[in-house]
Length: 416
Image (cartoon, rainbow, N blue to C red; front, side, top):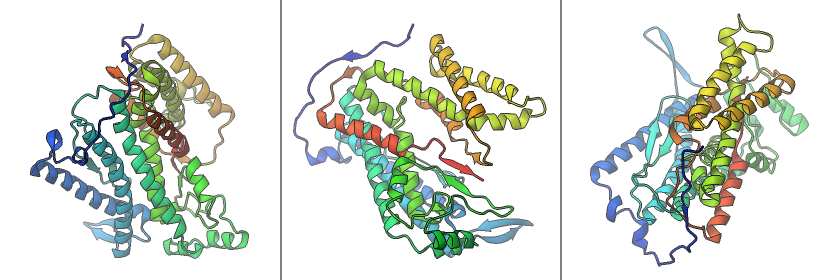
């Protein structure tokens, strides 16, 4: 039996009382920040900007300098690389800021206690784990839940599209790539054939990063003849920042738990239907995670494993069982069905359809299994009052779900 009860469903129209400009301003009421709070959030923003500016130079930089520090060779960015890092940080944080303040001002509008955005610097990857806001009180009505959930991804999506179009309309000539090392093969192939090769020509020791195509990014890039392939976009800060903006928007729009997509879909279809969709989606995520996990597990047990990685699959099955137990709240029919579905589909695809192309995948879906299971959860908690959304909200809600489909990549980052 399920251990949660459905919320009360009430069909009433939204209040249409006029709103004053001051309702959008955080300088009144419960959301008025003091000087100490403003300084704290500003400091986090500055630290994140510095972190992204420096760390991203390893990705968008042209040629890092090398210094010897205590006998160790240490790479560091030169002035030109640092300026490219600053540009990328400006673009990426523009997206993050639009996304988080979309949530923030929607919460302020509905007089919901909310924090300013917390920017999260980290000296890895692109220099940040993103930004979050903290809702300090429970939201009891689905119309308010919808507004707060949808405002962020819609605002961030618009900024990402603007960044991408600027990048596509300002693309330099293909010879620009030689500023990042020897790209003669790519340049000559493009000049002879009018298109880029399907894959780079790598020499020993070189690594190519492949950013996953999304339906929307692929459609936009197809409009521009000189658009670079996804394994070259790291050299184009606008395109790279726009790609991250689309993909981060899609991650937030995944229809599970306390993610933006969970709030939106819950408001659209209600508690029971959302729980079904969220559980099925979580099973799908575990299938994609298996493609990342099995090679890693096999690297540790290869001396004892069979040719079809039987031991690796057994270890993965044990791990999945524990995740499903927690994610589905020990609902055994769902645990058993989810586990069987995930293993059969992933094993079947890996055995009969997947090809060994020498690509190494990122671990993003393994991370999201943990993150969903232990933090955002699979199921959305019940909202006390389920109001029917206005027609405008319904349209925006389904547009948001379409944005998720158009912006998601189930193999977002791999390398050869």
